Image (cartoon, rainbow, N blue to C red; front, side, top):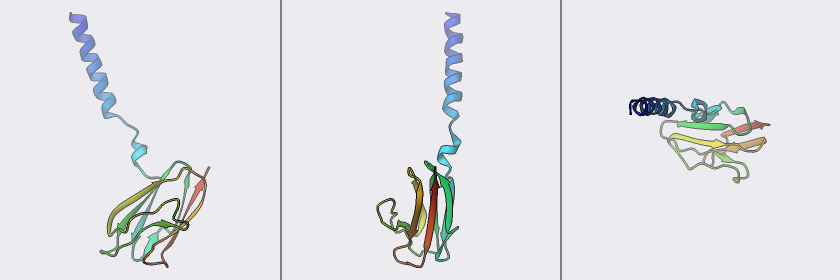
Amino acid sequence: MKKFLVLAIALASLLGFTACSGDSGSDTPAATVRVENMSYSPASVTIKKGETVEWVFDDNGLPHDVVESSAETFKSELLTEGSYSYTFEEAGTFDYHCTPHPMMLGTVVVEE
């Protein structure tokens, strides 16, 4: 019985440590683009295939979105705050714009 109790405590400790650990990189975007001052900053980012870009909206209440030129790869809602993230599964160059402000342009370059 004593061996069982020691084994149960060791197993519970191991599970507790495993539950606390995690892949911290999975929640962290490879690139962050600020949406402010009527622009995307930086206007161009380069990432690897399978990585995520996060757009953070903070332009004093002005609504913006992020729409890939063909509108088939990614498209956010109009946002005045908060963020939008997209994980790129294919390599290529993806140009995007803001629907209400077409002079706002950006590019995501995705490498293999």
